[in-house]
Image (cartoon, rainbow, N blue to C red):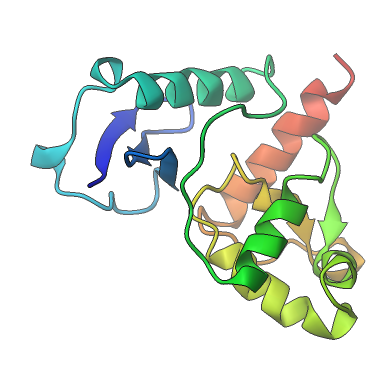
Length: 161
């Protein structure tokens, strides 16, 4: 059984979701919460959601560059491989879909990489915003392209600090 809480942030309210094994969902402010508002818990009342919230806020203020949380994510073997590779893209850096595809089986898998990135239930924690199209073009992102640009700009701003 999963439990969710809203986290107010400077970018709007995020919805964090955890199950008995770890963090399993993060929804952007523009996305509808995955649960009915009446079933949300107070974030301070759930240790993992509270910690995830604190780490997300620290990321957004530039004082954290990676996340140290137990994760509980389900996906195909290919999705899991892509998500693992996403976690290796350093803070403030980008990779193209084709470059990541080479890491998981060949450039011809670039579209499949895009599909796996789109299925990522923990955007930001698993940094799919660091994936860009060929030629530097911003492409698909669950939180919307303005949010993707905001996250990339935030990392660029704090990279040298």
